[in-house]
Length: 499
Image 1: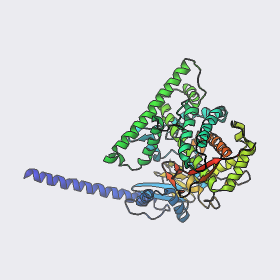
Image 2: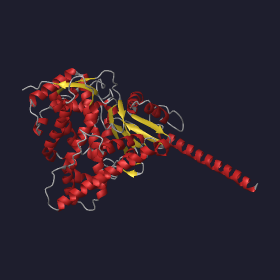
Image 3: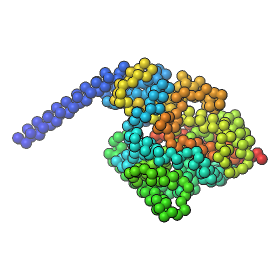
Image 4: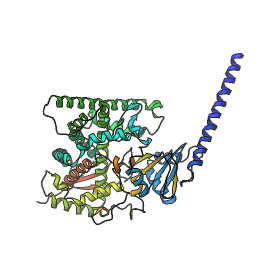
């Protein structure tokens, strides 16, 4: 009887404590509302959940959250408050705000990068260039990386760009019968993986011909893990445990491969053997000049380059093909430019890239409409006033290139694909276009990515005609980066190359 009474009173006590905790949490949520509710925003779905139910419905329908942000910006203005439980994100969609928060090093990156830093409890990109929130530590890394990504150094790697792009053309030629259906994104993902592996680390993955080998599969599975990690309870769901375990093993494989690659190259450098002239060699030479630069930091960037360098360029190339197939007049114009500059030669030189301005405009317009990395974030530690709106400290700022690129305020007919927006005579976008971010933390690989994209697109435009297969959607899939949901399914056939 005494034991039963103790259990009863213990249960009552636990319920009281739970109620007290709940009330304290409600009080804290109310405090957050009072602190930030002067910032414009749509009505919350509920006191506790904020806008989370609406956002989850969008995700469950496989729609794009950023499209809803565009609607909200049109209704409530370019400074938007979004509540999720006790967390507040403020979207800043003005040139003034982008200039303030991206051009200054005093604002650190937001918590949204945490899944890329550590995934399911395993170090993933760690404190690499993408995820490092400590500016001084990041700047030390950037000093090491910059020489390896300079135009001067990258132009010496054009041979590899040509080699791998030529491999893609051979693969496409096998199915260029005008009938076979080809998933463009699949092939673009493979070729960009082969490029980053060879150009950056001297690795021959050959995923263009076999994407089922362990390393490409590990990258694919890890990217899927990043997408699924948005559910904070995923690793505790019984049916997902095998998936989570496989993601962890994939991350370990990536980092183990990086360890072997780096150690092998260090021995070559120390032994004064013939060393590949790739990005890894440049990075290791730069690292030798820095004190206390450890292997883990190198591994963080090894993984970062593979994930970020492969996925984003593959997405851009796929979206470019999608839009060219939808706009035959633009396709005809850019093919004429390629024929005039390149003709029938197979080896594209660095100087050729600068003579393809219309292709450059197409690639820029592709990133305006489909920025593969849709935005970035910063943490606010001191109060600021933007567009007359006071933003107190303690929030995450969302800075979104996708949303700004689709706002009528900044671009006329923003949903129209129009490369002329980036012609030399067009007005320059003033802090509204930042697919590679801006300021000191802009993407170190943007020159690399656009050189690669130009070489691949030039050869594709030179050799083939392509037509979209009927019935596919033009929806965008958010996997952390933005990619075409259906993969851009095309039929292709050879075109006559002008002599």
